Length: 436
Image (cartoon, rainbow, N blue to C red; front, side, top):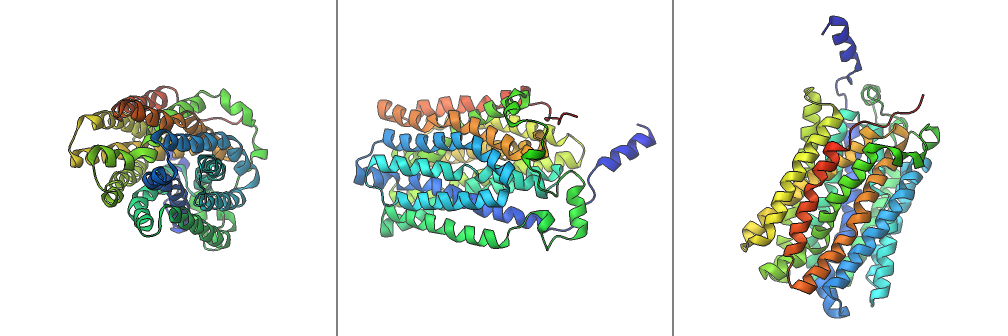
């Protein structure tokens, strides 16, 4: 390589990192995501007591999970467009308020029809959460750091279920299952008030130094981009091969993810014969593996990009494909072990690898999409995951009721998770280029 080429390549790289204000933004996204997942995970914790009081079956609990996921999936498409059109802060604040009210109302339900209605409302409200986080990350972080930043805030989807079992089980044992929904709903309202007062985009931040802003801007970040400024039409996003690879790959991931989210506590209780109090502890352990997987996967992609081992896109695809294969192996073995310790270990490993996929996949949206359409592409990917994955809780519940075992659900779920490697490895290739 000539000296001129080396200088040109060096000039295209982001400047050295300056300042840490951008990392405080990850805190807002992390806390918001944790609350989001508290409000999903509370159903899994409350399920045993709800089934007794309201005469619900495994299929009913699975149906509630499916109703939420399907609504959540369908609302991804308009939510991504709304975020790109009206801005992150406005849409996110409305969304948190909406889903918090839906959560609170769940505690007042006495029959299946009203439970279904509140799960629909919850799915509508929660849909903008993670597309907003992807968009905010594209404002605040250069591409080489987005994998790590996304891994941190996406770990919220594991912090929530990790903390929820012990905390919410204690509340349920003391005050009943309805209190879970009242408490988690109120927490969301408090959070959104603080978010409205303190969060700012980088161009409006008073704390951001000139040096850090220059660093952020060195790789295309630093300003809010509106979908009205894009030369790519929203509907045309579905014409791109990489977008379809993301849709199919995320479906393979979320299919298995939803099994864990809806049935993990019940699975441990029914197969390992643990008590309700023990369920709160053992159900949280696998999600700790998810947290580690999220952050580690993001860290690996950053290091690969820093050292020039791969482009930001290639680094994320490598982590996703490797994690998908390892997740498949871990999940398929779960039904074949009887020891509580080995079962929890395998579930922990599986969630660690699944989480490395989700974190890198959300970060990938910022690399594949034009700056003005990051939320839209991220939401479309999430739509693919939850539209298809919405049916896995229902299928799992039906399998458990029909066969008296979760084995078939875990074996098929592991195989499907492994297929994510094919989708991200062979279909997702190039970023979307704006027409000139």
